[in-house]
Length: 359
Ligand SMILES: NC(=O)c1ccc[n+]([C@@H]2O[C@H](COP(=O)([O-])OP(=O)(O)OC[C@H]3O[C@@H](n4cnc5c(N)ncnc54)[C@H](O)[C@@H]3O)[C@@H](O)[C@H]2O)c1
Image (tube, rainbow, N blue to C red; front, side, top):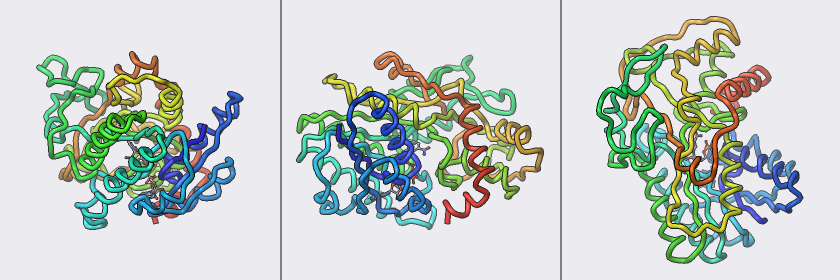
């Protein structure tokens, strides 16, 4: 199988590439791996050689330029792992609103045109940030062991249960420029697939985390927190009374990759193309709980507080992957504990990781 990964030198792109290389090597099936990246993300350069080491062929190109994709040979599947993945992008004064839309949405049109031309399948890595911020912030929650849990004794909106957010939860605006660019990309992907008869899968992922994730709080909170804790850098609980109770689930990219192999090998032609993927309630953690884990691992230290909330902050976001479980028999194999430990070991061995990857 010939697979092109866009954003191949990003955290997710590189982890998916490594997983595919191992999985195909072990299966006896042949794999030709291609990648494209424009190295716009600080840290991506670190993966340039890694991609070659696993036998991949890397193209330095920008997906906003259709002609950069023209140079790429035909593949069977394109996995889209390229984006500016920050919920604050375009509104934080660091990047322009136009630029995030160009990276996340205009690029998608170029990728879909490529898939149309070459009859290639398209696997889009989307995000839990497609869900309505207002609806998420109104989820009834209770405090539970230094974190939050859904209050199941209150009436719950459509798409929400104690298991998390399902695919039919509200996607009404506002959902951030990041969320809306991904939601629009999803709609276009499914539309192109139906109109031009190529397979499309959309996986809406909650937090993806593991060793090698670049360190910025808005683009990899688990890696940022564990690395900062390990290296004695200042840490603050922001918003929600400064207690650090905001709660998320986490998923390792290997578990996402395993599902994508299944999807790319399937000849399912149903119209149902969108799935939520996350570690689910078994993998939830609050920042306060994460700090407790770090204290056991690295020794105790003080965390500062800043009670005032930021734009787009939400208290609880956990993905309900029941649909993927029913459709694909999928469930995550890598536990929260394993994810934390993988990041912690990497942080201990790479004391400059935050500086290098978030420059
Ligand atoms: N990390 C997470 O927790 C998470 C969760 C859900 C979904 N996702 C999705 O996974 C994908 C990858 O996220 P990540 O965490 O690996 O981000 P990342 O920043 O580590 O990687 C993104 C890569 O894409 C490249 N890129 C960006 N714009 C490009 C362009 N125009 N042309 C070519 N390359 C370009 C960057 O240089 C970078 O190497 C994104 O689509 C994101 O929405 C990530």
